[in-house]
Amino acid sequence: MIVRMSKVEIAGPKAMRSDLLALLQESGMFHLEPEVRGFISKADEAFIRSMLPDEKELSERLFLENLLAKINELLSYLPQIEVRTSYIEPLAVIDLIAKSVRRHSEACRGLYERRELLRKEFDEFNRYSQFLSTIEGLFKEVERTPDLEFIGLTIKEPAKIDALRRLLASLTGGRFELTTSTSSDGTIVALITTEKSFNERIKKALSDERIPELSFPPSFSSLAFPEKIKYLIVRVSVISQEISEINSELEKFTCRWVPIYMQVIQWVNGRLSLLKASASVFESGSCFFIYGWMPSDAFKKAGEIVEKRFGGKVVVQEKAIREEDLERVPVVIKNPPYFEPFELFVKLLPLPRYSSMDPTPFIGIFFPVFFGMILGDAGYAIILFALSLFMMKRYSKAKNVKNAFQILFVSSFYAFFFGVLYGEFFGDLGHSFFGLEPICIERRTAVIPMLSFALTVGVVHVILGLFLGFITTLKRRMKKEALYRFLNLIIVICILLLVAALFDIFPALLTRPVIITILVLTPLLLFTGGLLAPLELLKSIGNIISYARIMAIGLTSVLLAFVANRLAGMTGNIVIGITVAVLLHTLNIILGVFSPAIHSIRLHYVEFFTKFIEPGGRRFEPIKK
Image (tube, rainbow, N blue to C red; front, top):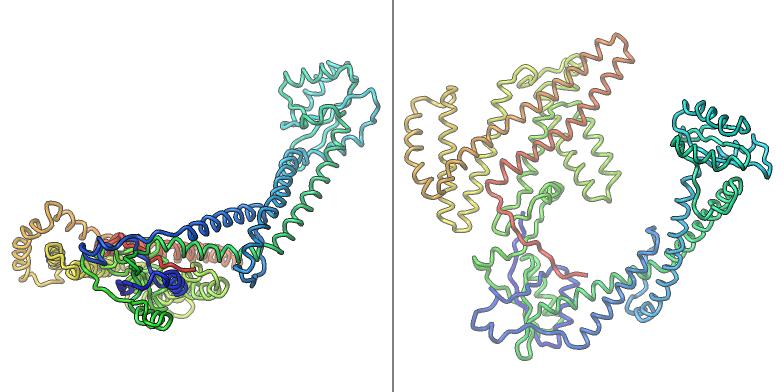
């Protein structure tokens, strides 16, 4: 539900402004309003002006912002590891930190930049690592002498080896040796050993034939081929060791100093928040004025605290919220424990206005029902129930993940309930093993009754949405809009009654009065809603038809479950049969979680909420530490 808010004015001597702001920040329940519009009369605005910060506050703010920037720069050079919590009072060490942060930052920046250079060099050398062991093995097979030249190659196609041998034979008159081996990634590495006099001729021929030579960094150009390999292996080892030492040094620094710096950051952010809040304070003569919003249930207690702290010198007053204020009232959504997890879905939507409704209770009531209607299998529900319990315990500290599985936990109960009604337990396994029979309907064969059931649910849901839309506009005293929504609601009900009469659900004798009602109300609908009113009417009918997806998606699920059981029985082998059944049922469970969830959410977002939710709310952002 949307929490009731109070419009608040606080006034007192200028000397107490900072202490009061600190108290409001500590409470974390006051939303500052940077404008006086709506809080005071037009005549009084001439006597109220923004309270400008003095030189001391400006200096403090610049100092703290500069300090925060330096600390953040320092942290950017450090590893992200878990550290202890520091209990040092930040204010006591703020001057020491201001002197130390530059020295620490320079030292850590030097280590960081050195490590980045080493990593770049390591990545460059590491490109050759997959060939190193292969080349080393080839060198062991070759007799090395000063007059010999070595050329390394990488060959993608094995068929080119014979062509390469013939090419080398023609170039050297047979005075060469070609040894090959396969590297870890499947590339063939070849080593050509020949006389130095043939070196340039061979390299030119290899280039013409597009056979890539094993290249090395330019810094290796002065080294012979064997020395290149040896140096590369040694250098990679040295770089790895140096990087490890730098990482160790940065981690030690992080464990020692980051807890203190994090504590300082928290204090600085709180202090800056307080200084920035001062810009929303107004003054007149010797008094200050603060305007804002707070939850109504906290107003009385806040007034008592201010009275006790300042001995009656600071006054807290609640002002009446006028109709023009409704667009500016910040919104806080708070729900009972059962509905709270469903706020996860509501957060995906724009915040509703203060004068609108919180959609959380509605999605908390209808979403699990729709989910259960679509999945409707008691066996699947038991698995989802156990899974949600395990995941809620496993991710108890991850609020969003826990909320998602709490929703699944509730939805699994409804899936079990409808599974019993449909007589489904892993498809027809419940019937085969336990004699489980449908209590009300068998989805696999009763397609038309299930379609009627789904559309009936759609009628109830959409009619409720239209009625809530009428109530919302009525509360906002939008008379013409309220009349339009009421007429729209009545005409939709009349159309549904006519459709029901076609199927002998509604008495045919009453169709004439219903038709007359539609004809009488239609001109009024056009007058109140404009020329597009009939389109909105048709849209509501289309929304109801959209609920047929409850039947369609559910039918897909139950048919896949039956197919899994039939295929398992047709294999003729118990092991293979169980494997097939488990795989297909697992797939169906996965689809049975995502598909019902997605379509149930869509029915709320598109078909239901658009009837009464007014987006564009202002988020409640209290000053706090």
